[in-house]
Each structure stands twice: as C-alpha cells, then as structure tokens.
Length: 99
Image 1: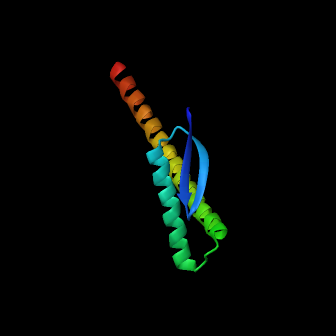
Image 2 (image 1 turned 120 degrees about the horizontal axis):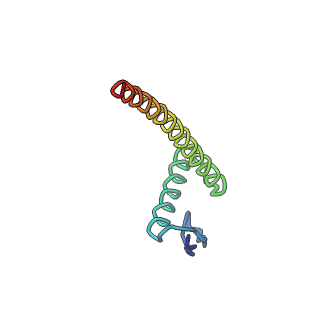
Image 3 (image 1 turned 90 degrees about the vertical axis):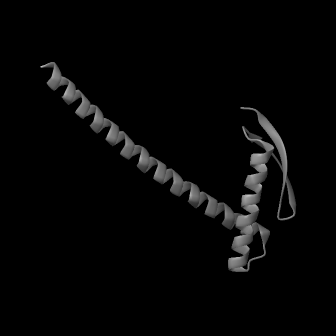
C-alpha cells in the first residue's frame, strides 16, 4: 500500500500524519468524525481539556470498533454454520439421487 502524507486540523490543532491506502477525502471525513465526536462529548460533559476529550473520543471509537468486530464475528460464525448445514443437506440429497 502506498503511504500518503496528510495534514488535518482537529480542535484547532494541525496534525501531520502518514496514512496507508486512504485518500485525502477519506482522511478529511475521518477527521471531521473525530471533531464531531469530541464536540459531542464536550457538550455532554462540559470538559474543555482537548487531551481528555481526545482520549474519551478514542475510547468511544474503540468501543464502536470492538462492537462491530464482535457483530462481524458472530455473523461470520452463523454464516459458516448455515453453509455447513446446506452442504450437508446437498450431499445427502445427492447421495439419495445416486443410489
């Protein structure tokens, strides 16, 4: 993957970073999500310390990612069971027709 250098501005702070496999548009959209998340947390908690807001936002994103991974794993396991069941039924049906 190609590494691209980007500069984003979050909470008035300019952050230069190198990101693999993403476009400037994607990075800008992600930076906007971070900005919105921090603003929402600030509004709910009245915390103005950007470091605390950044950590809290990171935790919320990490929780969302964890939940999505769990859901994906559960879905994948269920899909695998369904496929195995269909294969078993198909094999059984083929054996009945052959004999």
